[in-house]
Image (cartoon, rainbow, N blue to C red):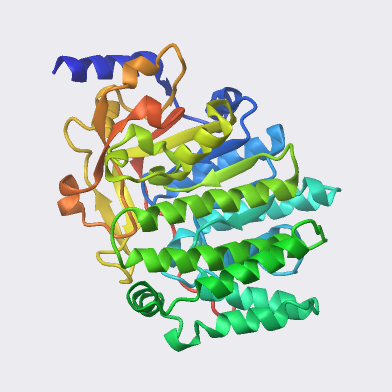
Length: 422
């Protein structure tokens, strides 16, 4: 009880109220000169997590010259959005989101993201130099077949000599009919994998295209799609074996994609990352470490130093969320029950009503260093069972550099169909 009261008192003393967009200015100041700003979320279906990250991203782009927003999404679908926001192709914002057809589609095909990309489009339209335009990219690993198709299209369009090698490499995947699970079992247990073919192709493409810089980012598009192909092949083989390897392959891939994007923008580049708290918050400050898991936040801090990485976690006490009861099922708007007694979110609520922002510094980190349950909601969610698996044991001030708490949240607004939109 004493520890809990000490925590509540510390929140009351160190947090400040979040009422208006201007209250985020202190967060922007605290970020300083960090190269990577990681913006989390406690679920993939909460409106405020998207809208607050949008406000922060706008400020970072306008005030601190950040080059792009990278998200926990597929590269090909997100690159279609990038074409829209940079004016490479004339289309509506709704059509730009039309390629998000992989479940869970609501993560990026939603009204909140639509408003973000419309802002990016307008910002870039006002920007005279292409090098100053802000991009939008996906850094996840799941788009194996889509990325292979993009590589073929790009090589064909540019009359590249690597086209035949690409067709030969990808023919290895044809017997599996675009079903990752079939490929995974065959590669992992029967030695019928395609890793040699895709690795050789990646090397060929990188050697030729890495240094190229063109008006529509063809070299970057080729490079990341090739990276996805190699790492997705590895990910699906690891997935069927169990253990931490598939998770770690995925997060290492996301870091590699971030670095490719960062390098493309040059030595002084600055990158915003939108991902779930479980990816952006340092895994070493959670029980993930005991399971042999690493994540993006940890890897970036280890590689670039803590002063170059600023991670902001998000959370809520109660509200509604978009999720599904089982993988691949229809989305639902679900109730998020009040936070579990003794959890981080419960302490934030007991510290006083209203939204709050906490910024962790050398002066106050020790106040929040004890392990405490911290809620995490995935795309699959069962509120009635959340006490059995939705709380991650966390040292909050080691996991994050700041935390934004929204007392009562609302489900985001999915765009349920983009078919036929132009």
